[in-house]
Amino acid sequence: MSKYTIGIDYGTLSGRAVVVDVTTGEELAAAVMEYPHGVMETALPDGTPLPPQWALQHPQDYLDVLYAAVPQALAASGISPQDVIGIGVDFTACTVLPVRADGMPLCLDEKYAGRPHAWVKLWKHHGAQAQADRITALGAEYPDLLAGFGGKASCEWMFPKLMELLEQDPALAADADRIIEAGDWLVWQLCGSEVRSMCLAGYKALWSAETGYPAPEILGKMHPLLPQLVAEKMTAPMLPITGCAGGLTDSMAAALGLLPGTPVAAANIDAHSAIPACGVSRPHDMVMIMGTSSCHHVMSAGQHAIPGLFGIVKDGVLPGYYAYEAGQSCCGDHFDWAVKNIAPESYAQEARSRGISLHQLMQEKCAGKRPGENGLLALDWYNGNRSILNDSRLTGMILGLTLSTRPEDIYRALVEATAYGTRTIIEAIEAGGVPVQGLFACGGLAQKSPMLMQIYADVTGREIRIAASKQASALGAAIHAAVAAGSERGGYDSAAEAGVHMARLLDTVYRPIAENRAIYDRLYAEYRTLHDYFGRGENDVMKRLMALRG
Image 1 (cartoon, helix red, strand yellow):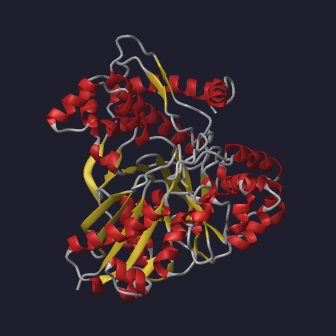
Image 2 (image 1 turned 90 degrees about the vertical axis):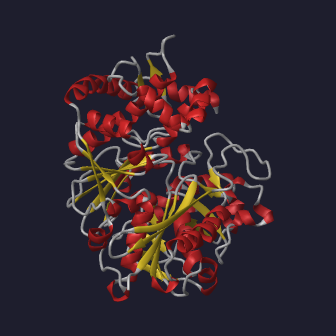
């Protein structure tokens, strides 16, 4: 009798559940649900305005995904609940919320509904840049603090967001019984046990297996109340991402249509979850997870200090390896901005009449154009720069606009900019002592856009393989669920073993075209000039403009 696991992937705008055959990796059914409240960037549900650079979410949306997507996928699969041996969850990070001792989010209490800090702070909440800058400065006094993070703190992490909370609403911070990552909170809701993921804590909260969180002395220099907050509100046991957090509670099992006690894996970061779904289980293969933002992961047997990386965590993806994380804060968001803001109504009418998306139309209009033909060069910083500059105050730019520039020219320039950003990351990692050999991509962008992937191959000068799963992060969560269940239940005893059976690649391979690569080498050199000029302090006009806007 076949056995199955369910992977649940929580992205920036939606959540999805997939039912997977543990033996073959076949995805029997999937269900997707968009978050009803989306991303709250200007106001809370009651109309309370939000400052610039804020990005909040509603925790009920996450539960609604469970209650809707899991039963829907289960019903479509046609399998029996008795044959589901595990559930895995991945989540965007750092996405954090304050809760009561019983797990109830403070924002669901009328007393706190109008207070912004009571809500879920999404990964791309960039309101804590000033606090991140102070942690970066503290790194000069305590070099080990940021040694595994390229020497700079990110405003997307846990501690800058906690400092922001303590400085702007200390009373709410005092009222919270726990401060928790949303992925860990979901696992808590599923199995009734509060545990923390070593992956989430390692990459987003400066935690390590050897030393735990930073010492109270260091935390106290971040904020005087931070040592007490960590000691009292962040004390749950740590689990590796393949660990079993517990079994489904009776009430949650009834709501999802599954059996009580079904094993639940520890939470994982959404991007990290996709790595085993690409079949990558060895060092020096890079996985690009391409969605709203993008993440780049490569593993190494050794530890190397590489400036600008977002995290280097031992056992962060697979046991025995250091997992290096980098990424771009704007990828799919970049292209979405273009179709929503620069495509004229005539383009929209054409797309509607042909029954295709604006993205498809834009890419069609780009087809046949050679690199450099549009005369444009862009910087991919529309949501700040994650790697390798790690600065949310940087902004996007398009150079070379003329009266003959067409919308599709801008669209292609933005695609090329993200490819240049990826090449910058690869070169930084290799310069730091970690070779990048194979290149793998997953996510909707990788599967849907041959134009995009060919540009990435031409810009990087590397062959690119594509994951077969349309829901790679969800498949990765299902793989971890199979490990949490263990071989005694019909699963596996390691993620590498599970990946051998459950991960697949498409036959498609994108190979660089020599003449395109030669032109892109020239364009990339210009990109790096702009990258360093605007990003490394020679001209801080972007930050001055950001300050005026704020």
